[in-house]
Every structure is written in C-alpha cells, then in structure tokens.
Length: 258
Image 1 (cartoon, rainbow, N blue to C red):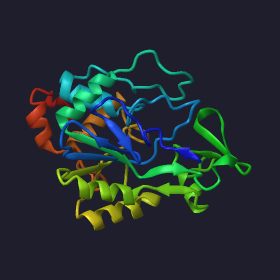
Image 2 (image 1 turned 120 degrees about the vertical axis):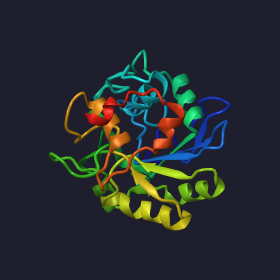
Image 3 (image 1 turned 90 degrees about the vertical axis):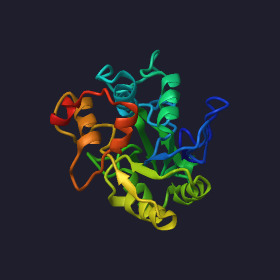
C-alpha cells in the first residue's frame, strides 16, 4: 500500500462516512459535489479532520452562510503545522451543519499515490516523500525548486485515479446536479474531469483553489470570497447565486466591489 487518501474510508458519525475517498453517507440527498485533487494521509503534516480541513474552504462557507460576515480570517490549519491544533474553527460539528444546510458531498480525483511500490516511499517533513532517490511533494501539481509533484508521479504510473468510482457514485446519486472542482481544470486534471463529464452528462465548474495560492490581494479570505461569489473570469466559475439568496441573504454585498 502506498500513500492513501486521508478520508479513503472514514466514519465520523452514524450520519457521515466516506468510502473510496468519497463522502458516501450523508443524512440528506446531496445536491452539490465538491471535487478535489488529493488529500494524502501524511502522519507528520496532515492534521485535517474532514475534506478540505486545512485551508480556507470551511472558514469561507462559515463566514458566508453562518456568520454573514468575516468572522474567521485564517486558514483552518496553518501551513507547515507540525502538530495537531487544539482548536479548529469552524469546528467539525459546524462543518456538518454547513454540509446539511448546503447539501454537500465531496470526492477527490486521486485516491492513492505510489500505490504500486508504496513500500519504497518514505515520508519526510513538510509533506514530502522520498521515492527511489527523488523528493516528491504530494500537495504540488508540478515540479518546483528541485522537488517533483503529482504530474511527475503520474508520469511513472504511480497515481491511482478515482474517476471511475466518482462516476459510479454520481450514477447512484441522481440528486447531485452541480459539481465544483476546486482549482483550474488543466494539466493532469483535465482527462479525469472530461471523463466525469462525458459519462455523467454533468458539467464540472471550477472555483479558485481554497488554499488561496496565486490569488493577489489581502485579506486573502476576502479576496477568495469575492472570487467565489462574483468572479467573471472565463477560467473559473462562481457559486450558484441562488445559494446566497436562499441561505445568506444578509451577507454584505460590499464584497462584490473588492
């Protein structure tokens, strides 16, 4: 076994559980699928407790749909965190409340890395892996500063893609009508996304990555919120405006002008 997805098979409560890196059990019929890339189970650096547990994803949704203001301004877990935080905001229970409110489900396109020769992969500090004398970063898409990324792992056929399982899940869950992919759909992600679209007839829309990397301006979370709600770039979509009208009518419209 190689580096598996952190939520490959997780039971959080008797209402929420995952299989095959997909949130398959929910107490509602999900209407929105949030499609991600990879959340590796790295013991030294990944302390997330749910899908998107580390970055700005849940603080963004909490601010919009619960606080109706910018109450949380930081990533849920700080980058390069070396131990599990004592308090996570929003809490896991608040995450479940947001899932119920918005009828969310989650799935990632990669379920495992180094799945053929995982016994030869060694976890290092900083979310990195040493494999056959090379250093790989399982968070980065491509090579950078001497480290290789997911694109290079795919090139040596050590990525276990999850699109077939996601497609089957979508066929079994006809309540899902909208899919948001949380990054630009290019590079190695284009093929599995096109396969999902082809075999389900559902459009996959892109939201700017909730890590905020590459997004200009500060405060970062406000720029992300603005992008998710009001973006007009052809490379990305935005959240369905009906969600805002239905569940957050009091969210300040000033963020449209950031």
